[in-house]
Length: 120
Image (cartoon, rainbow, N blue to C red; front, top):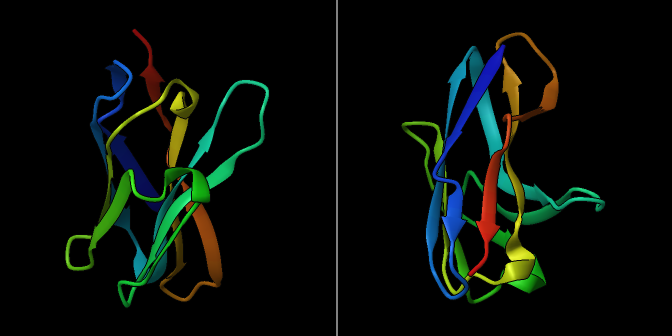
């Protein structure tokens, strides 16, 4: 099994910053990519940012220039630095791991989610 533990959510004013972190543990054989998704009330879950094992990244257009994703392959952690936050960034943010367990197939794994609220 894989456990993804997220931290760093909270309440912040518009224009402020937050840093989300996610640590993966368990019987992980290989990680292809780690990333962050978000889901606002009444909306579908959407990609925020993904970082591949080779360090290449992919960002949603709505966060380009404001958010930065980073990863520590040795520690199986991924972080999301969020700057210039807007009210529309309010959502539950989920950590995602695209990987393979020992003797297992490639699969997606999800954290429990952490609430980010941007409000004055």
